[in-house]
Image 1 (tube, rainbow, N blue to C red):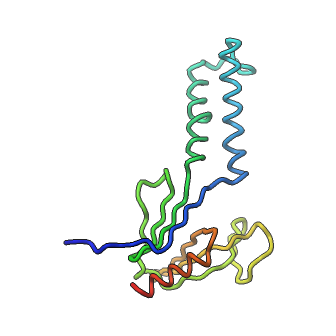
Image 2: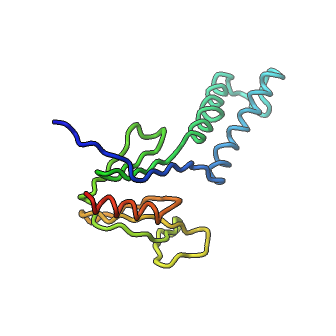
Image 3: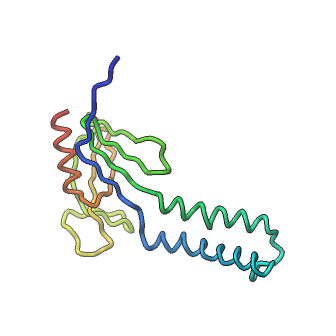
Length: 164
């Protein structure tokens, strides 16, 4: 059976570079880079005693190279296609997660405070709240999709769902 062709109506790629996450990833990485360079130059790590060099090297590989690389490459992709909404987090997901239009009951934009978990109808002036697209599914579940352009995403979902 041949699958019908789907085409992309809306696509958004977000780089997840937040200052809090940047500090939480770069601080251990820079610390381990310092320890490794100091151990190469002076023969023993600075301030680290009784820890074998193999363990420090493994920590340097994981926290000094792998985590910063994964953090730098992480992207959130949201696509509205003619048959559904596709969401993917690169490199953590190997394929898109599909939300078919027939299970989407309602699509609306609200502001969302991630610290309290509360939603507001009126746009807030505080930087803590973010506008998100909220999908209400026919099962009663709600799904939040973050977007830098929530109006465009919501209108693309409504347009595609109307044609479906």
